[in-house]
Image (cartoon, rainbow, N blue to C red):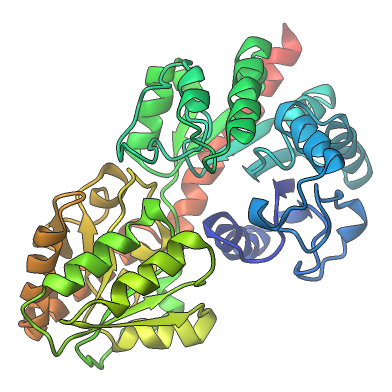
Amino acid sequence: MRILIVTKYYFVKGGPERYLFNLTPVLESHGHTVVPLALRFDRNRPSPYTHYFLDPPAGAQATGLEQFRIGLKDVARMVVRAFYWPQARGRVREVIRREKIDLVYMLNISNYISPSIIDGAHAEGVPAVHRVNDFHLVCPNALLMRSSKDRCMDCFPGKYWHGIAHRCVGGSLGASAVRSASMFFHDLSHIYRRVDSFVCTNPFMRDVLARRGFDQRTLHMALTPIDASSIPVGEHDDGSLVYFGRLSREKGVDLLVEAASQMRNTSCRVFIVGEVSGEYAQRCVAQAARCTGTRIEFLGPRHGEDLFALIRSCRATIMPSRCIDNLPNALLESFACGKPVVGADVEGIRVVVRDGENGLLFRPGDAADLARKLDALAADPDRARQLGLAGRRLVEQEHSPERHYESLMRAFEAALARRVALRRR
């Protein structure tokens, strides 16, 4: 099968890109050909298909909204791409014809590329499969939360005006209005009904889409994969606790800093790994500087073996998310290294973290409860090791690349069958 994978970035910026680069060799090992289609950014990895890549909305270096020059042209481009981008539709059709594509697999398309590519696949008679990485199909900011409400379902189902009233997209009235209006437009146009299969990463996501009215026959489960066989178990334990990921409010980094300040074990070190940029991250740094208890260190971004070496040496990792989350890759990476996770008791985390079996769960938003759980593992290295090894067994059994491939193929085969049935009507 020749598979066109469409996503915003062709470099590792977050979970969807890690998934892309982990999935590609698995598909190729089974005889499939993968053709990527992304935006043309300076940070992209090399590819023989870059001549198909699309122009980014605000230049080859501006990969996020915070880097955009907010001029009239930038605003116009973003509005077009939020609603419907004819150029993307045309490019998908071109790639399908020239590369003889059998199936289009969409990973991360909202705002920068638009669902117009669904129509491109549909026009060429090729099935479209959409992996649902976050809640963008039901929530303007894709998080099911807002600044004053950690768990928000106000826009569900289809009441997107709440996103405008609360400025849910980056605190911007304009951005929130564009995003909310585009969701109304997509609902009215029924464009997502033309998707032949949705790939959900956990049962909660599948249930949310079913409650929203998506055809349950198109909803398929394929748990996020990780190749644990290529990641050695960490034998060393230096007693540290590690958070790695985005330094953003939904990830609860400020909650972690507060919990660290309340820990009884003041000799423990807490390492925070991620880009220290933006107003929120700087507030967390200032908050940590006022902490007189447990030592907190911001290490900046780390990737690849540098990051895994840090994880393999720690006591445990921390997932203090304020939002519902959607099975973060960091959970699986921690377990693959044989390290337990202390995580918020929310749907996207407890689907993997089983309290007392492979990690510990704390009450969401409760810094004191998080501090107690961190103290418990800081004082008990043997228990931490047993929990971590249980996590390793879980990812080996339930999240292997081969198991994911089998689940993904079922979603692909269902999409192909649906497309054949539609042709016969």
